[in-house]
Length: 282
Image: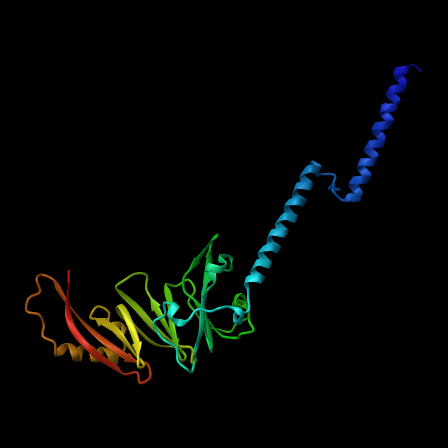
């Protein structure tokens, strides 16, 4: 045989041995898909594996971050009542322990304000709509110090919820939960919920601000436009008071609406009219 023939035979033998080694390495490393109908570049397999490993590390890191921030509340320097925006003060029967804004510490927890009492814990929990998270409403749970903050949603005994509603937490007096309702200034709603008996005990409206002192809720208003939304006793009080107020002699082309300002006692359920007058509307 001539020299070219020897060279050709050597090349054929070399390529055959390389192909065998490649097949064996592929089987041993489990990098090739064994289906006869699927065939793709080995570099794609490496990319997928690396991406999956990276994603797992990211998820693990996020989980570890949440575990780290999911602290024991007793180890945190909580803020006092005066650092909150609450309107209703606590009582000795249900003392206010402290407040903290978790969103400022780690937004990924999706919890804002945390208000802790002897009996209850209030969480401004975010809610998800599509791919976005929003704040609105809150949840109230029985306070159990051994439960981590982010575990209340799955483990806690929830006694009140208004997530996704235009409701704001305004404080707890004994077992009475005070809720501010509305989306803007002016006439807004107020609701008092009895956490112990699981019932709404009072609903009303107020004009820009309300106060709670000596068991009385003040700054409450009722107008002729919404009087039919109230019970018969309050309707009777409204019109009895109106009868003693003189109708304005001059309306200036406007429509007079009678409005009363009153207080409500949460213990005795008594209503006291503070004042009443006509307001003019177009």
